[in-house]
Amino acid sequence: MNIHKATQLYEDWLRLHTALVDEDLELKHKEMAEGAFPFLRGTFYRWVQRWSKVCENLTGAPVVLAVGDLHIENFGTWRDREGRLVWGINDFDEAAYLPYTLDLTRLATSAYLASAEKHIGLDNVSASDAILAGYQEGLEARGKPFVLAEDHLWLRDIARACLKDPVTFWRKMDELTVVEASTVPVSAQVAVEGALSHMYGDQYAIRFMRRVAGVGSLGHPRYVAVVDYEGGRLAREVKALVPSAAVWASDGKGPIEIFYEAMLRRTVRCVDPFVTLHCKWLLRRLAPDCSRIELTALGAGKDEAKLLHAMGWETANVHLGDPAPILKDLARRKKGWLDQAAQAMAADVRNDWREWKS
Image 1: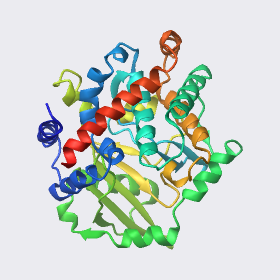
Image 2: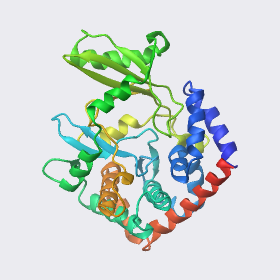
Image 3: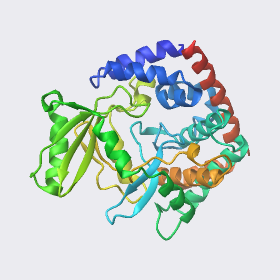
Image 4: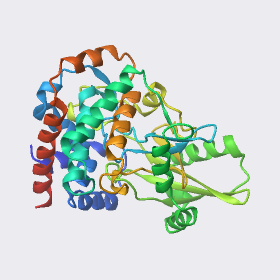
């Protein structure tokens, strides 16, 4: 099955679970053609279909509740209940029970593709070694969240540099297309109104806007609710969730279940109190201090290995349950296994990308 057929079948399956926005889907297809790295971000459905064939020797690894769509731009900041700035994985849309090796391979492959496109300057072996070292150390330590206060000062400096300017942030919110509340699904409205009234009462008017964002979830219905509250504005995004593409790739053999909430409960982290689920809608806070930290923002060679090490550790924070089987499996693997797997998958992704854009 080629990439075009796989995409058609997957999107047909998606339509069984949500009402796709066709114009956003067309934009996603265009972004996928722009480079191998954005192609990777937009095609987890293809990744989970191909990985088991290209990396067959990794499929027997211990199974965990995995991120699935893990890559170097799936990390960012949020505020915990105490208002502390926290860094970590911020997207679990594709969470599923998968071998732990899939997440590590995808994370390393994304770094390799970013390096090939000159977004980062770290060589491939150093990148995969940093990820694997961080992952193993995180497992052995039984995890620890990344609170950017007393510790991780280097990461805090990076995070602060990536935080959005409030004026620019709200200007972009103002540029979104306002939609009539009647066009927003009732269940999405209930999710927003319930969360806001629980925290702030109901003395405000909600304006709904349509938002286009991301790559992998482009095409899913997504709305932003903005309210004026006590001298300023608040924004909440509500996005339609669907079962993981891993279910589609397994021909429906796995549970048709959304694991986002289960993932949040199991991870070692300081939770974002504004992330909630209602029916099949994900609700989260949008604000200048909720930002993605991208390797591309660092500049070649600057803290890249440290950041990839932290990404490996944060992946361990997510995988932790019983780390013993994973550590035992890691101990038996030959040196360089992650580099070999990432090299093979990077080549496979590039082949699909070249076929997609032609």
